[in-house]
Image (cartoon, rainbow, N blue to C red; front, side):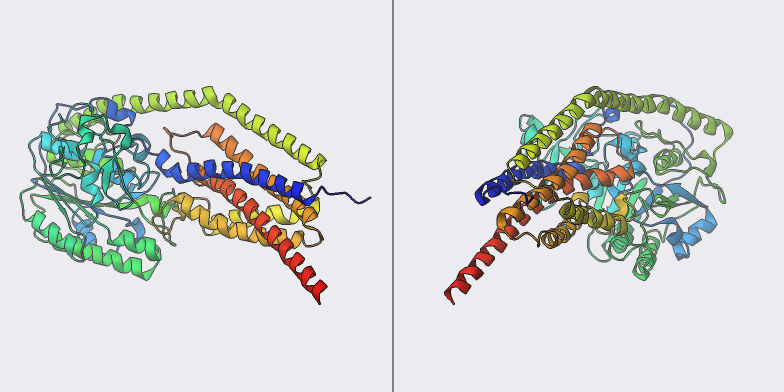
Length: 577
């Protein structure tokens, strides 16, 4: 017995209904996917709500000046056979440090300069656009009456640590809330218009903001870093932060295993050597590290060894030549530099002083260890309580969210049953087995192969995870469209083809929207805890899949109508012959 199909106009109406429902889901999923990276950020983490824990105990100053050099994107294994770094290794300490997940640049600039990793600092991606309100190495140095300078070819470094002018360094800070517009410029956050501080344009020359650096030099032209750094090194800053981006640029462009990346490491090494050429290592100290490494194909953000392992080279006054550390992390840099300068460590930090690398007597070591312990007793507890409260809130509302998802799925199933009864939707198993898996197979394969094992490091170029996933989804969507057309070729009428196409659309929407709903139930924004590397890709991937499924409904409907019109035109043309 041949199954009957409803009139064409009813089938088209059903297709339009599915298109409308899918469109609503696509918009919501698209917005969620687009905002995912921003949802990871925290303007004011829990640590910033407490006064920094400052230990008044002092230890002797070991170095007249300390230079902290960050070679952006330099992975450990590629940091060897660089003339200047190797010379410093021979004269001081050659060890390894571990970067922190998510292993992107801005989060780990903060790790280095505050001693707070991304999970606790609230700076989780390179999209973070509000000043970090955590106690920093610069705050401690200036509070001790020291001068602080910076030279960089990347302007975000000074901008990350802006302060309200005259703000006490030892008090909790109210967040400075503004964003970055499409041109990369600072602009007001519309939610803070009532704040007297926010009413003054952030970009105004008289904005009531202060840099954390007494002398900040931004030089984004070829040779600019060396020029700015040499001038700064000739000055009298006690603490100097240097950031060079050539290696990271090459890593993103050609990958960490490329000759171009190797050439960039040599260029950066030479630039640093020019800046520090007149450094007196009998009185001054230098610490060189990186914020992260790069995969062979280019990219970072995940937990791959080549991404997390970075060099830690320390030499000069106060440094114990030939020493090593087995568990150094980037969050240990700030307290270690503080010890070299004889000042307290940043008071929100979660790192420790690498006393094993320094020339400290037993009493000084005991004081630094005790100060670290006292600080960590407070800061670790604050972070733990924040995570516990967040987990409790998520669990408290998870059942309700799952009920919403289940209810929506049941309504969708009831709608499908109604449409099947009215013969405007057909679940043809043969068609579904050909068309529906096409999208998921291609999409997942592209993420797994091009995306480097479902890791955030799958972004070879700087960008938003969702936008890259959308490119993969678009390719998969086109493949599914052609598969659907091939599977539907046996149907002779538009009504029958559309009814089967409606079945494809409904199945695709269900297979994407239900998982998206379940993920929303388990991982609702905002994110106090950072999802694991796999989930950091899967969450936006599922949201993008919903958007792609809805777009595929529209494309399928358009193509089916176009085929119908073309066939009708051909019949009319033949009838006129």
